[in-house]
Image (tube, rainbow, N blue to C red; front, side):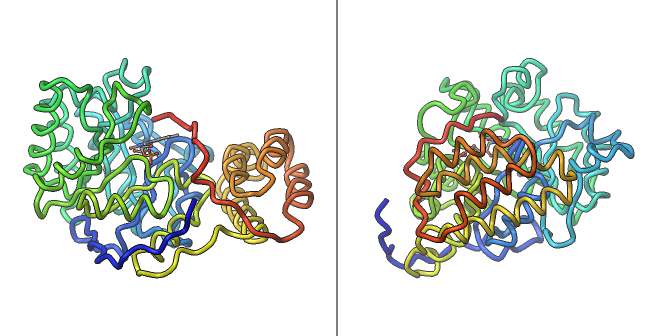
Length: 357
Ligand SMILES: Cc1cc2nc3c(=O)[nH]c(=O)nc-3n(C[C@H](O)[C@H](O)[C@H](O)COP(=O)(O)O)c2cc1C
């Protein structure tokens, strides 16, 4: 990709209720990825705010002493402000879960009305709620009432269930109704639930949402695979913030690169091989602290495969990470492919096939 310098652009100030963030650059909620380790890494490397992976309300409410479960709701003192995201179907199940997340240290409670996974929809959760505005808004009210007034409640929505006019009407009913019930910000992913990840995120729709919202806070989502794309979304749609999702998996540099562009600076080059090794080690350490060595080793494989996209020898590095069975092999791959320094490559050119919630 050409690293072109963009004309200076006055970045918007992103506030979520009483929380004013240092920049409009956000690490998105990513199921299976945005655990405390990924979030802390994102914050250390330039994200102003991050969200945990979506959690089932009925799970959160009953998390006991099980270490593995506690890790899923763990917050680090260095990551504030951080958002916790809930998913469920029954409005009654949300309040205890929301209160528990606040007790664990989450600063913002986000509600998921976007997940398009079949099993989730089948259980009337996530994106399904876009088809039932009354229930969706009841959930919003119950969460808003459940947590202290200074804790912002936010929403994550797709642009509808499908492209029908009824779906569009329901989107606006939920959007306006949620703000009327005290929601502080809404993140909109410009794809429909039916679309899953096929086709582009509709940024024109995001622009129309921000025009409609006026001073109400809207964060944009969809197809943010490079710093240039993040700045382009802010410019083209007028949204108050950008929520970087797949583009941040194995590429925490995207946050600082976006900040550089927003400051009118020349875009930094892709990280060198040694910088990549350092980041991989930092990520591994954070993951090990949270999950212990064995689980961290397994979890890090899926991240490492994404980090490999920045290495000039992408395919052999990727294959070597896929083959990692134990933590010792992990160090072998680092020694073999990351020992000698050299320039990295831009990962944005690759099609990313990661698609889930
Ligand atoms: C693997 C994966 C997991 C996701 N998990 C969540 C989640 O837990 N909560 C959520 O609101 N969105 C989730 N999303 C949606 C993303 O936050 C984002 O809205 C979507 O990927 C579009 O942005 P992108 O095209 O820049 O990736 C997930 C997406 C992916 C690919």
